[in-house]
Length: 262
Ligand code: 6AU
Image (cartoon, rainbow, N blue to C red; front, side, top):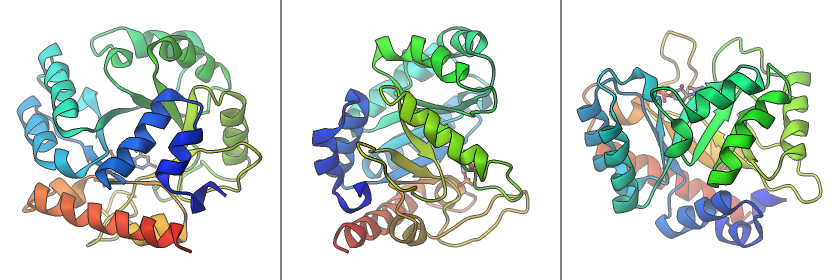
């Protein structure tokens, strides 16, 4: 089972170069924390990335919520990723036919494929969505996650939908390296998917808009997921982002150490 192996062991065997580098990075930084930087200004996003940078393996962006987006923001985030040694995950949640997502991924205002190491997509449109994104991303050494489950109350991503999503990931393993999921699924021969879980909070359990927050230990130790994605628990009102990021980094990492020692 990949859940029992260390990130380093897994990195040695991984066939996707970006997933391999990401697993190495997690081990090097002793971090399985991704910060969901859902801020609406360029200055706010850069400031947060610089503050939490030392504690994270992955900065997750929603680039389309930034009011004053420009190429300089991308350049600065890329420089911060180098300075602090983290990767960038644009949480675009693509959901259209292959030809359209190719354009959305490569072109337009954001040119996501040019700077984001990892992105994600819903499987609603069927297999063509992976084929379209893969055509753009593979030559650039990018990779993606499929949304197999969601953290929100009443999600329709469950049962057969989740199972088919996992099968599709197996079919396109060279580009699909993992899932947004609430738990780890049983491995089949040769599987090593990276499981990233949003809806993580140490202090609160819900936001009144359907989000449901779980403890880091529940996600990493009990459910066997690899990366905790934390937003408002870190940058929310009245919080000190560097202090909180360190707190979540420790909680996530300790749960991982406990898991691999099982
Ligand atoms: O910690 P929060 O609730 O402030 O932020 C959670 C982040 C947000 C969501 O867009 C995202 O995680 N998210 C996702 C992702 C990462 O794809 C899926 C999901 O099911 N739930 C969820 O909250 O940026």
